[in-house]
Length: 140
Image (tube, rainbow, N blue to C red; front, side, top):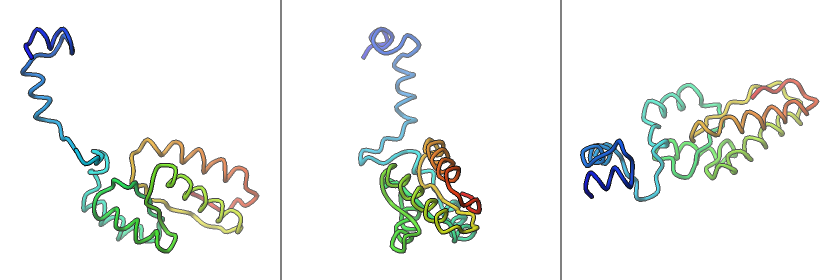
């Protein structure tokens, strides 16, 4: 493409050089991996293993390596889930409801192996469950 075509068809502020710079600084994951999920490095894994061993662990299917393995292992004993956004939300809702129904005094911890955009919907859902519960001893 010529500079003129780029300016006309893509964006007036771009040219061959800017497109080349964008291309050379962009990671492409042809297997469907998510850039956000690749931010879970070894330091995050170590923190989860050492400081949050009592937490429930959730992960999207695209989460790479060790975080996926932690969530998968925990899922075998119902202390985690690997799945879609709705699978993760359903798991968290179920755990909060179970604790509320038992009348436990407990702080539930969840590790979210997913993008930050899920946090708001999770917090809203958990707040609704806790607000409607007669048990006031559960924190999540």
